[in-house]
Image (cartoon, rainbow, N blue to C red; front, side, top):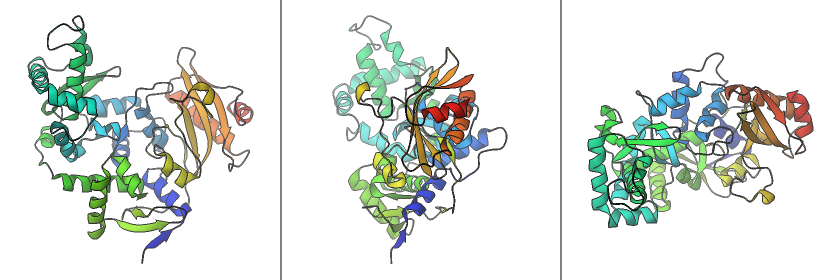
Length: 400
């Protein structure tokens, strides 16, 4: 008989799986804490938007508090990196041990079976050119996209800008090269075998089926309880492949099929999922955070629609440009449109909105505390609240 979970139980399971049932570190956050968070999430999305902070820094802040930002940089791009960059959930940082699990995706790119259509066509039509770029990287060492703009555009040569950039993207997706480090936000590429540890490079390559099962289990553990669509989206896997692999995992007893009240689709529960009676979280969430990056799942879990409005025309935005929901306990109780004015040393709250079911008088003090924590973490001196949104007056008073 299929077990049934209440919506509240599913929400608490999901929050615990994402690390929000654990108390923040009392003291300095170290490498071990950061690595545990990265391994728990399985994937950290990378994005260039820097209105508050580039999004890959924010998931660890939401869960650990004011950790040293250099920790992420060292783990992702330092000499003893524990993370690698690849297409996981969009452009992503993932634990180094997972690199062999994506070799099937790299092979699909080499065979022209996956990837953006323009890039796939470029790989088919210009493979000789791409191989020449790879040979040049082997000789020259690390390169950036900017290296392809050294001469006038359209001039012949391996550095020809438009084709060179495409070649780098193709080689990255196909796994021949990877990110050695970053300069600012620009990738510095090198041969994969010169970047990742020898133990990882020489690790056996699992079959596509084995790798996909492993990725689905990582996604299931990171979400606790999830539908087929949720699991598929975590590492952007195909519909047919996910359905087949999930059936195999259920048959093997690695996942438990469950029903969740209010969810239209059946769900799957990871055997290590925890179900706390209470969640005491307090966190500002990046719009690209693993917990809320899927609109449908967010609405099912929290009963509110969280929409990324960066690409929405300004006059049509409901909450703002770069909006961070505020997680309080096991509910999203507010949303704030934030901007870091680094020149003025100010974290600007451009609007503050209260969710309909939030308890008045309880949100503003907690949110003000989290905003002050974020401002200090970003090296800003103070928080300023603009007079926009029904929560703004109370929040401004709480910020002081």
